[in-house]
Image (cartoon, rainbow, N blue to C red; front, top):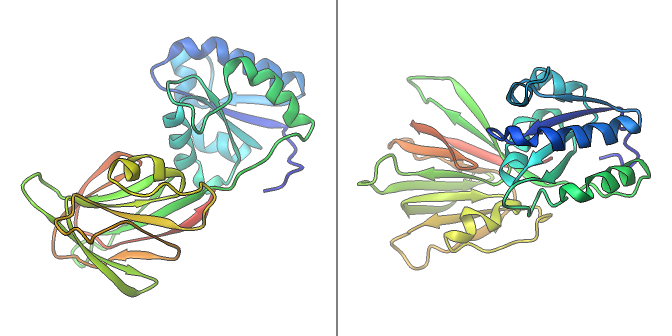
Length: 260
């Protein structure tokens, strides 16, 4: 990402169901406009605070940077939704967690001023792309993008899932249990950590495979780079992306790293 980024247009997204963020939005808007930038807000956030907004996709296309005002969940959602546009994201913490969105509202004006003085660093974080295929009966393929993790899970509480894991087209392992977490380094402190997986440095070029409640003690977490695929198409599985359930489907899935 270009360190000498010219910030002329800024797109803003607010945490949903939080109309009290209107005051903070105007503070951020005024600071950027002081530097001559045009500030737009996505239409959903705009409707929440009673102002005019812009379609999300169009806003991403036209913006030089995107600003998330909320907690880590808001930033993760924005990273996932805006992935194809490859725009840097500034996170202002107005939520309960601030590991990613770590700029406090009282620091926002000073930090934005530093952006225009070139005093900033852009971290490139890995993301996971998953392709869900309907198989022979339904040839449609859906693509999911995840900032934290993608989870392959059992479709019902009474069943165990089997995942045949291939990495770079070579068989790696077969996992049994409640599911399998495919985590980015950023997501290693989320569901992966709760399931007993390792914490990794956020800029590591690898993803982490962590089984959920495996019946075998040797089924430990591993980290790897490259392409992951589940080739076991004989059982329905549930899939979730950054804790958002996508439903139970029969599929093969492959994921590989992207930087955001």
